[in-house]
Image (cartoon, rainbow, N blue to C red):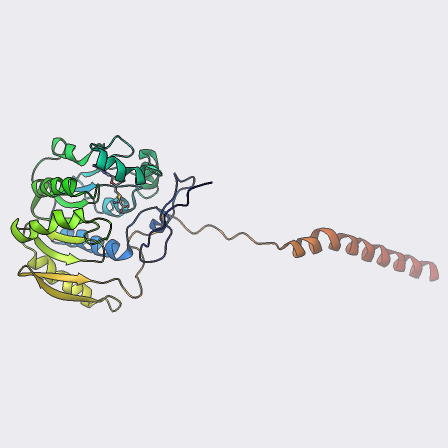
Length: 309
Ligand SMILES: C[S@@+](CC[C@H](N)C(=O)[O-])C[C@H]1O[C@@H](n2cnc3c(N)ncnc32)[C@H](O)[C@@H]1O
């Protein structure tokens, strides 16, 4: 008997787990992953904010799975910037503990599936590092990235190392995002990240139901601009709290989610006409004999009229 696929709540009811696709995804919602609309909107805004503020630097994603978040991040690569994506994509994980957690993803994941999905939205591929995140320092130079999404292994020891890699590769006001910062099944993430806030100089930007956004630089101008943006969003609820003496914007899910920031890559498929079995029986089985009978009768009547006159 087939093992039932686990379902995850993306916040907006999409079924996210799927096997290697056989048709190109048209919308981001069709790509498997755990990337809620709230984080799509916040990440898209932050990347756009950096661009409007003239910040330049490379983009890095640790943990790409089937490409859902990478597809959005890749839209923000500017000329001269690199976009590096690091994932095991089924490669042997570095530790037995990591192997147990990575098995969950490898059931559905191949590098080909990632590349297939990404190519549906982008003509240029990102640089793919198929390796554990611990190998990133050999490929990404210190102080080169403006944005890092940490979403690979969620175990404490690995996230702790990923935090330090992010810190090293980011430029001064670069932004880091930590996934699953408060999920019940990933206690290693908050255990590895919050001490960096308490004692490592990591400054909070905002917290969504899933992710923490922060910087080792100056969070204030980013937060000021973000609050203006959020206040102009009638369907978004947010509040400001003080955490470890730092301002934190808590962003809730939009009550009516705006459209996905990644537009569909093509028009919706043409709707085919659904013919019910009853309609088909009338058209195919009943109509032709009725028509034939009617024509025969009309011809006979015309013949009779000609004979009578
Ligand atoms: C939660 S998924 C990433 C989801 C993706 N960011 C999205 O939003 O669609 C985690 C990914 O991390 C990868 N992974 C797990 N352990 C890793 C490690 N040590 N190094 C690199 N990637 C790893 C898995 O293969 C999996 O694809």
